[in-house]
Length: 387
Image 1 (cartoon, one colour):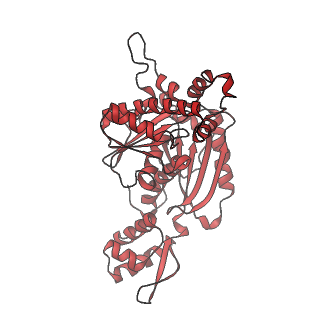
Image 2: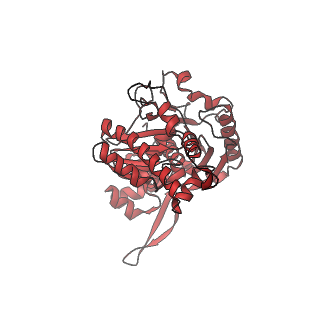
Image 3: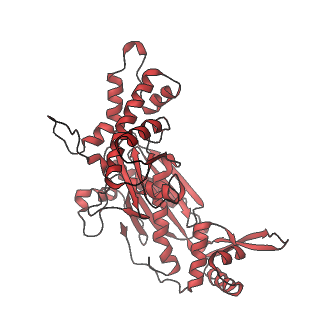
């Protein structure tokens, strides 16, 4: 969801200048010949576009690169005038923040670990967001340029304009936090953000169709079909924690029970209940369990395999419904490569064939995804072109 505030007057850029700027945002520093060849622009057009972008400081020259024939070519990147964005992952276990230029050069980064894992977003998370944003604003340097957009990823569904924000609980993130005035605010579900990041930078790079399944304190799915993030009418697409569960004769499904069963707290409770006294002290958390399994501990391996089978059954249900062809596993527990073989085997036994991969971005997926969405929101405003 894009909560936009009135924007300042936009620069009147030509189409070629806009194309050059977008190219620098997407690809990073490049020379004039590289950009011109990529966009099919003549040398005079490139010169005019660069001059047009240099005037308001949207691009800057950063040096020269030696060409294959011995000639040097000026290299350019996104400039100070383009400003920066702030990305916040308001998670269940931590609040992570990144400040970056529109071409993703890191300016500042902060991580605050919550004292206790939070099942749902609340005032404590909102206060942590407020503290981290305030610290980042205080650290702002003049050469960062203006703050263009603030993106916040939240562990709840997000509805658009006219939606029931009370039911979605998305506004709770603002209970103790007020965004800085005059800045576009982008709010998105955290798992959707992770899917966006995997699509652009991670295990699903270049894939038009895939599902990202997060398994940690909570579970969720981000779904990309036809290169489009699927949100659903109520922002609830991918809320696999609400799959009917348990689902068998004599059992009554309960709302959210699938998430309760597969989440790390319930999983660890099952591990501890089944951990015999003569096996030593039960693992304190999933990291310790995975470390034991990685070292070949038989009982730890047994529990990991069983959980992989449970996750695989859930993923198989998703594959049966949307047939994404590719599923990326992420989250605090789901990212473990120890789970991958078991999930893969179960999915392909119970459902249509699907490729299963582990995340390449790990815990950074969500904050990188909301950073991407913040940049996409800021970009049209900077170049004077609505999305």
